[in-house]
Structure formats: structure tokens, C-alpha cells
Amino acid sequence: MDGIGWFTYETLRRIVHQRPNDEFIFIFDKDWDNSFVFADNVTPVKIGPPSRHPFLWYLWFEHSIPTILKKYKPYVFLSPDGYLSLNTSVPSIPVIHDLNFEHYPKDLPFWYRNYYQHYFPKYAQKAERIATVSEFSKQDIVSRYGISEEKIDVVYNGFSEAFHPLKEHEITESHKQFANGKPYFVFVGTLHPRKNIARLLAAFEDFKNSGSYRQQLVIIGRRKWWTSEMENTFQSMKFKNEVIFHEGVSQSDIAKAIGGADALLYPSTFEGFGIPILEGMKSGVPVITSNVSSMPEIAAGSALMCNPFEVKSIAEQLKKLQHEPNLRESLIEKGRTRAHDFSWKKTAELLWKSVEKTA
Image (cartoon, rainbow, N blue to C red; front, side, top):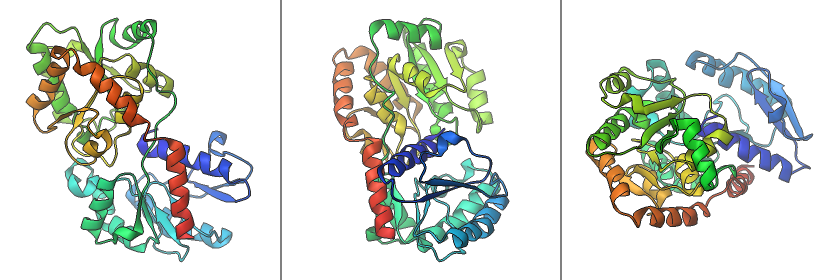
């Protein structure tokens, strides 16, 4: 799952278990896996059509969802990925994680961005309350959609307890598993244009060209949004044989990959939060991330910051980490302290407060 998937799973699982006397209706668009039906107070419901395209999203939210809401008459409709139905009077709360489609619309296919840009302002106006995952995203929603600050609750993300520092022999095993036995930098995330993969590849090339460095670059994520720019940059690299891609990696193996890295690289051009930043910090590795959108807020001085639009800026931070011997330990210590400010338990508690306000 990606960030929104983990947010949904981790928060709803806790809310359901903490409130055994409340009834929850979970609405699915296909046959569900029982691991998502967390307790006896959850009633799973399947409705069609499978919402895998903007036209189907419209049918699902404007026709199928209202039918279910009329049947079950819930106090609140909670949408953990931001979509709402405009065709219901049930008090609604969307979790709008970010407005990336407003800032970088060309990163998305035509119908997707048109749907988001048309409907999300309406969803924001329709909502009784809005939850979002950072102060940056809150202010973005306020300024873009003219929503009152009092209507928006900041519900920071958490991270899995699977992430923790590795012992020396575990790091050696991670080197073998992910980078042919060599030290490496790691990126984790869907390979989407806003994850800045092309510039990351170019920065790694610059880094390798500037000295006799042994590090490989390990990239973990789905190539769902792989672009010609990414492909052309990769194919033109002198050191492309030292870039290693992994897809379909379990969360436990992602934890191993991050824990065994020399640094976690996350130079995205736009994020509503950026969960991998915390995963790197909790794993006891230095983090290099961007100085734009929510990332300075989440890092809070506990990571190396780069300009994601400048290849040289990313590369310089990689070099800095190699040549300043005390920097690595300082970042690790600051990162561990910063990671203590976040947990899925806190996220679930804050989200439930928003639900109560909505009801």
C-alpha cells in the first residue's frame, strides 16, 4: 500500500478496536480481504462499479454511495482518501492529504486531473469538517479553496513499528539482499513524477562521477507512473548498472532496506507529508529530503535539506554526508528524537476527534 493506504489501515484498525460499542460500515468496491475487517463491530459492504477510473468514481460516489448511506443511516461518512458524495445529507469528513493535482496537474492523466480539480473544491465546501496530514496542507486548502481554518484539523501521519535500527550483521544482510553486497542509498515510494526520480538519478550520477564512492542507489517502488524523462535519464547514465530497482517488496523487507542504507533519499518536489522521512529517522539512518511543501515541517531540522529542482543541490548533500564525519551521527540522533513526535496511535486519536466534531 502507499501512504493513503497505510493511513486508512492503521487509523481505522485502531479506531474500531478502541470503540467496540460503536458500529462501523466499511464500504468496498470489490470483494474484500478479511484482514481489512478488523472486528465484529465492522459490517463490510460491497457495491459497484469498481471505482478504477474518473467516470466510475462519479458513478460510485454520486449514485452507489448515497444508496448505501440511505440504507444504513450513519451518523458520519468518513472518506480517508478525500472523495465525497455531493448527493447525500449525511455529515461528511474527507481526509484531504494534499493538493498535488493543483500544483502539478501535468503529472496526472487528463481525466484524472480534471476530475480532481473539478470535484475536490466542491468536496471541501461540502464537508462538515476536513482532516489533513500537515499544517502545510491545511494552509494550502485554506488558500486554494477559501475554507475556514477552524473547519480543518491537522491529523499527522504515523509509521509502522517495523522500522527500527539494524544490528551490524543485519546491515550486512541488507547489503546482500538489496545491493549485491555493497553499501547503498535508498529511495522508497511510488515512482511518480513528483517523487523527482529523474533528478535523483542525475544527482546520483553526479555523486559517483565526483569520487571513488562505493554506494549503489536502491529504488523501491512501483513503476506505475514511470515517464520517458525518467527512462531517458536512466539510459544515459554512466553508472546505471549501480542503480538497482525492486518492486513488490513487503513492508518488513522495506524496513530492512531502509535500516541497511547509508541514507534515505526523499527529494520529492511536493508532499502533503512524506511518511518515508519518518521511516528513515526511526530506522536510525540519515535522511536527505526537500526544502519545499510539507517536508521542512516534518523533518523539523532533523534531516539534510536540498533544493529538489537542482540536481547539484541533491548531489551536494550526498557528498556532504560522506565528508563530514560527525554529521551522520548528529542526523541519526536528531531523527530518532523527531520520530517520537509521531505515531499511528496519535493519528487515530486525532482523526476520531474530528469524527466526533463532525457528528
